[in-house]
Length: 444
Image (cartoon, rainbow, N blue to C red; front, top):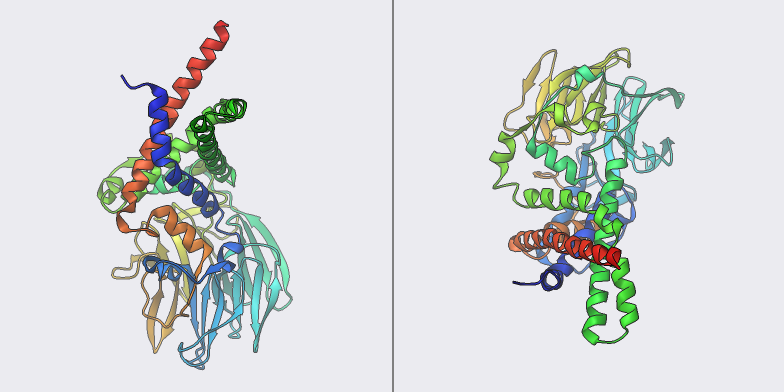
């Protein structure tokens, strides 16, 4: 029978490097709001990720008075063209999350450093500097902005005054929604599936940091033992490697590994994950609050609406909220009396007094505008619009493609799967050895 220490060594040496890649890249991807992930770029990269940065585009604007004047927004910054998209200049090096216009055709931008406004040829700060604005809406003289998916600021545009700051408190009876396994797997893996706020993210961070340390310390132990010297150093590293903290980390790491395997094969498992429903009664606490889950917002002068993972909720007094449309409200885009909803893992919808589905529209479209009189649903996943062309890729795209395996090849997901299974076996054999050592120590 193969001894546990030999199994532990085998899986550690054959999967350790991939485990390190997954843990380190996963940690940074969990913190995708850090600006340096988009300002750090590489000119040398494999052809497999040539177009990776296309997914970073967030919004698009065509000047109604000059169709050759285009603004293209991305996590990489704000890009402007005066020749119909043949060439672009970067005019603001911040993450741009949304573009909206007011009734005077002024253009506003939700950024990673507050709200900016275009003033003739310049883009200047408008309000809320230092706050990460993930979405916003404008109606008349009122601008509504969301900070960090939680705090809603209502702003009077002419005076630049904040008229109200509120948070969304939805009654539990409005949150009794079941979800599909596909949604639950993604929420868990992306650090938003357990508790409200950043706690779920910090649990993921804990798992990723411990997993990284286990990989590095495991290689150190193997090196010292392999060289058959510095016995005191190897014993010290073994103590660092095997302890109660590593055992506690089993829970978040196992969640990450199992959900990661599901996501690696989300295409083949799509029907299965869509067919399995998770009852609300057994869902974690975050699904009873969703206070930090405002992905999109809209204000029509009377009703304030938000989009979260359950759907679109509306309120006229900003206190009592009711579910108006089921299905992830990824984006909300208003065109006068029409409200367009881009879904994530859900259908796209239109509200014009009643709700309708929008068939044959791009999944997860981010905004709506008109070009040559025709409506355009802007999506970074599918777009024929003129976009800036980059000769480099961001650190974020490097990390993302390393994490999902496309950096190497489409078949690399099987290597990731092996590493995930190997890590599970490493935990099993490691805990067995740790418990055995504890029992021997207690006998002595």
